[in-house]
Image (cartoon, rainbow, N blue to C red):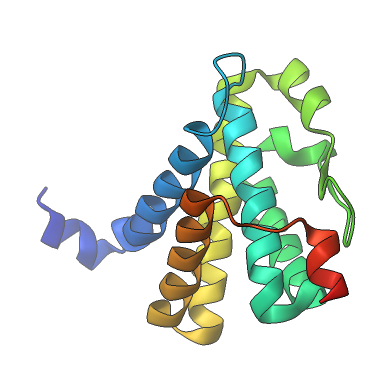
Length: 157
């Protein structure tokens, strides 16, 4: 089956979302030490994207997007069952260590990448794919420059 046939069936509809998620996670992995894992890089990408998108859609709107994406991903990944999102808190995501211990690094990484894919797709449906990709690209650029201020500094601004 070629890509055109798969596209007709709707299978690779998330391909652009998966590509940008891969870039997000890879950007966080490069900043990590050798002791960090794939799951920690995926969680770091979620935390980073939450801070960045909060600038554009507000902390409450961003939390709503992440909550919805988490709920959608939980249906596919039982590893997310004990994950809690803590709006306006550092860290934003709670329960990561217990999830890694219970499900392993690979399953946890895959689960958080799924959260990110759902988030990218939700954002694309809300504001359009082009605008969503531009916002996420800005997040990637900020990560590369290392000029992302902490969430507390953004709330004060």
